[in-house]
Image (cartoon, rainbow, N blue to C red; front, side, top):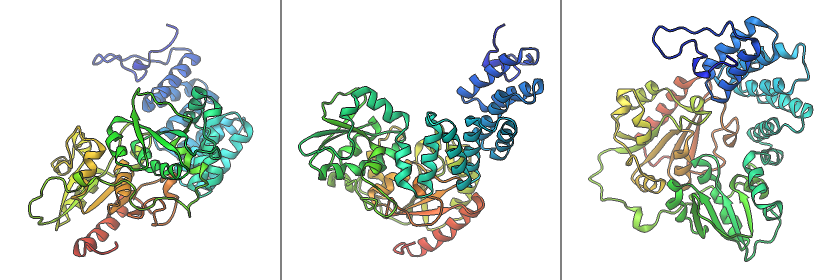
Length: 437
């Protein structure tokens, strides 16, 4: 056998009681298997494989690097630092280890130390884009947006677009747009599409005809935006003079934390949709709540709030009824949460959700697309931020830079502390819904 099958690397071939050992295989085969498992994001199995490799050679750079990456991927930064520190005790110039230390210290929320490690990694390997992008995200998180956005533009999506259309058709922030058509490419998560489409208003002010590329669930919502001339999805084709990635626009327009455009509601709900269905006499305030996000997101475990804490918040709150997104309810084991009424249908688009939110008094959510939708609609929204906040929320403060209607609740110790803070504010809000809480 020349290599291990990743599906067997956890010690079993799937047949009950049949144990299969990796110990007798050569070190290079074990290491290659572990690296394939990392690519497949099977971090727990990869960890066990790399530990087996390190039993054969305790100072294996590949083994220690793989184990450190697995620790980072499973939110164990302290263990990751120990792995990378061991590597650098005899290979202090290894960029991968420096970058791994940067990731680990970011998860430990020591962003200055994280920045220092990323700088060392970039200096050691200037052509390695991943460390430069990570440094850019760290600079953004620390509020240095000028340098941060410049480094963030090294991401794969920008390079792919440039290779596809040619550098001459990439909008550089200076080319005249009067009478020109610009193709704006929405990217990354649904919330990112919603957050950065606001920059189309600045493009429109320069005289551009705007085509916005997005995904089907967002199509109708984007069509409501008056400064977007056409929305395209999927394989639809469009002719244009220039193109730009949506998340490049903040940097091209020189956005800083103190000059963000369109902080108030910038997605209008059409009058025909605004009222929705006639509602029965209202007896309690309505709250939409979200405690988790897309499980495919690499940050989902960090940003998600434990179900039992959300259940305690709901059970202990009077004067309000709660609704949740059906996507969250479908995979929820907690009985209290699983029995919440859905805010919309399972196949609802973002436009459908927007209409439902017109009848909601408050949104309470972890860092998901629901927050961006609420902020873009101008709905009162409370954002619960866990450890290692996303760069757009910076690292301190309750003031939201991007949405006037969104209030930040930051974790200072753990989720129970944060939920207690939310509960206290919620009690005050329910006593006086017109307050500015």
